Image (cartoon, rainbow, N blue to C red; front, top):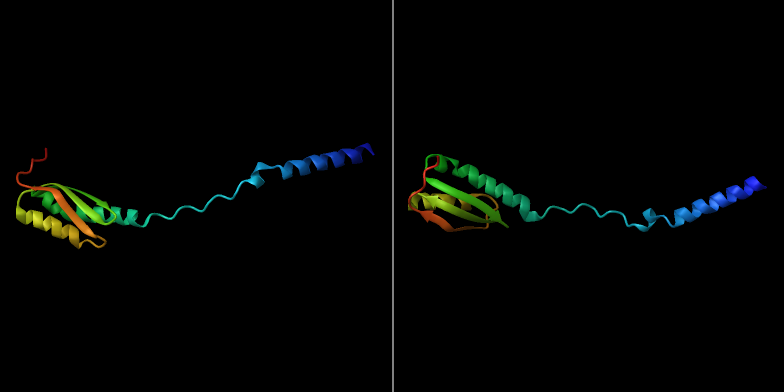
Amino acid sequence: MKAARSWVLCGGWLWGLSAASPLQAQEPPAPPQAPVPGQMGDAWITTRIRAALVPLQRDGNADVRVSTTEGIVTLEGAVDSRITYDQVVELAGRVKGVRGVDAQALQTGAIAPHP
């Protein structure tokens, strides 16, 4: 009889623990967030433009920094002439996914030589 009472007490104790288990009270974890649509595209756009500018920068005709936010490309730095300026802006605008080009911070004139 003593053994049966122990099992009943043990069973009741386990049932009480399972009913009050914090694991059951928690909601399942939320599914992972989908990437923001513009983020991957912005990085891809920036990389494509930087790669296309390598010949101009290697020849010393341009020193341009590129950033992209929601498809809008921002060009900063300097180019050696108006022709190079137009090339850089056109090149940036032709990349797939570009919604606009902001070249207000792109200067025309002397470019500081790289060491």
